[in-house]
Image 1 (cartoon, rainbow, N blue to C red):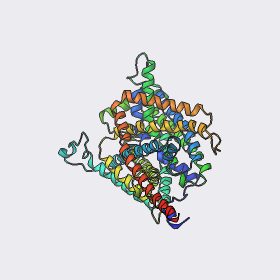
Image 2 (cartoon, rainbow, N blue to C red):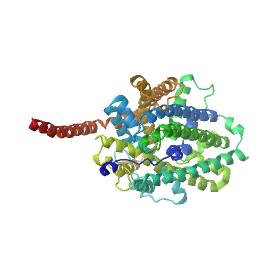
Image 3 (cartoon, rainbow, N blue to C red):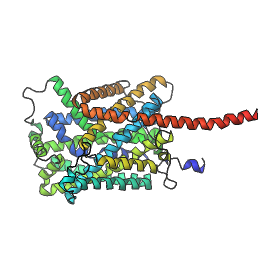
Image 4 (tube, helix red, strand yellow):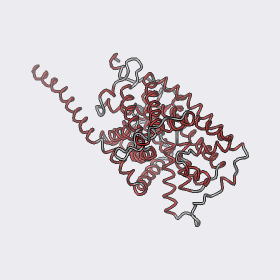
Length: 489
């Protein structure tokens, strides 16, 4: 390998342990602290909320089994971007990468960083602008509202981007530290909840006052459960993360599937335990009443306040600081590899294909991602962003998993280091659920669904421009060769 070539290659830095850490840290963020309340408001019964987390986890595990087969078959940087190209061609893979850049990954980074800033506000009251600026509307958005928190969110994104430019080992070791602290903190809450006299089985068994007197009708239950599962999916968002950095995993054919399955299984167990702890301590009606009074209230803060008194808010806020900072770091690390892979194929800004001459990290891809994520922070609508992430992502998640079935037919003789268990049941169930999720989302949230679709399709002009540019460059390279051949004759 030439020196120049090596500067555009990523190093295989991560072993099995670090790969598992990246999976966990890319997932556990704001969702574990914030999403129990909207789910409880939809379902009104603690056991149904836990069921929604479990069902969401099972569907994610089904998806993980499928991407484990794809990641072992194609262990390259960019993951789903490369898989979709091999399955459906350049256009679909580009639209996936573009969706990641415009909303799926960058909006996830922005949202998590904003929650980090909100948690910091518990310790250090962040400054706000005068009301006339805070209420200033720009195309229906309020970019200057909660300005101090937005500045902190941007600073955290910039800081972590610089850390990841310095090297993947630095970013990986930071993820290891934060993942350890997150799991210890969550364990303290779980032990505190079940070990104290504050919670009870009776609290967990009680239905909220909003539960229908005669129970849910079938269609009302399905709609409420699917929307609750969609909320839970924000908690699991990041489950595709390891597929983005396959080129940097040691022994990827063996370690990628193992890390995915082990990492997701740990996350599912943690989520079931901590959400059960929340609902064991705090009645649903009490939780919802507090949150309706102040929409910025976090359910986890209410629970720890009840367990530990006034100091609880500081403890849980510290947990949220740690988890969201770690999750932002992991998401920044893995997401930039999509744009690096796109640029290498001539379907993104050219400089994004370059790696740092010393650190061998995709520094330009990281910088582009940082700029757009910071702009999204100022959009001022983070609840909308989290829903957009899920709606947009699951269009492609369904296509990715369906690709397993398609490749089993198309490349049936190709050796597979790892195969999906219970095939074809697992991929078929996942794809069917994605279709149901999309139908209900477009029915219940038409505007958000339409915006998500428009953001995805906004990439079409860029695709045709970059594709045409790439074709003309290829033509220029072939013309001299043809002329030289003619001269020789």
